[in-house]
Length: 339
Image (tube, rainbow, N blue to C red; front, side, top):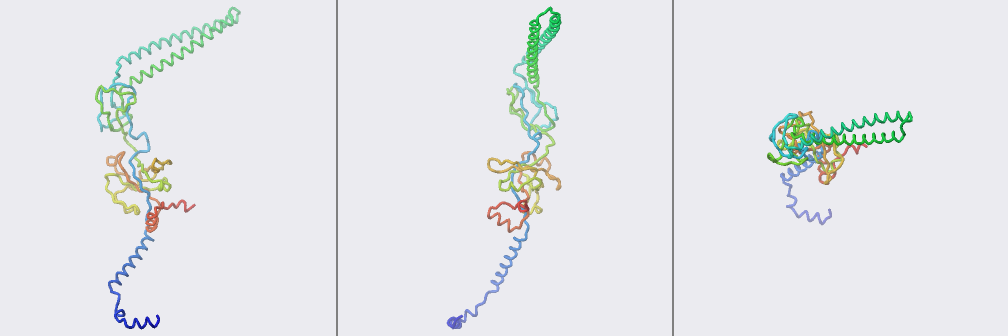
């Protein structure tokens, strides 16, 4: 400090008397303490990174998904044997159709009889021709018949074989048509529940392939299909644990501290579909994990229920996770760091 400043300060007695208020000191110390604690928490508090996705309850087995009961032949609805929500056993009737042409089955049966008679005649003619061939070959060896006679019989035999084959094919075709027309009552393919019925009354005409009802079998092995972003999908692989929250089920979720979550259920990644959808997101299939008692009963969590899921990834510090989220970086992948 130069002499001019010293002389100036010597004349300012009030400045010397000023002191920092105790409250300000306490606030400053408290703020510094809070800053130190915050830095320590950000540095040492563990945080589990998650990949969020939403989806529905479904099943991997296509035989256990909702099935359509369709009409195999055109006709009219004659009788409904069930109502929506009814539980049915395998083989129990669902709906009976009536063919619009009541004489069709009779005509098909008459056609089958006619073709069978034609087939029997062809077989008789073929046996006769084969016997004639044997006789002419014997005469040819004795010099009593020409080679041309033998060849003509052989040609006739081949023609009769072709006619017999054509008759047999026609007979099979008519039998298939009769069998299809005879299947007028649709039955339950397995034990299950009737979901929806076609909104049509008796005498309503349906075409072949029209859906008459939908059916869900019993004993469905439930899975969850989650949709995750393409940014997180490379870090998701089979075996990853998932915390799931089902619609209508109260929960309190801590995505970074899964042990503190309440009302969520544990799942495990089964596989990730290798192809993204039109929006660039991937479908992740999650199976039930029974280590914590499994998922809620089927009466509470049915197929098609909405689900939210958090796929558990790597554990990092809370400060790193905040920095990552602010910068939009992908989660940590320890697989890459170990290579």
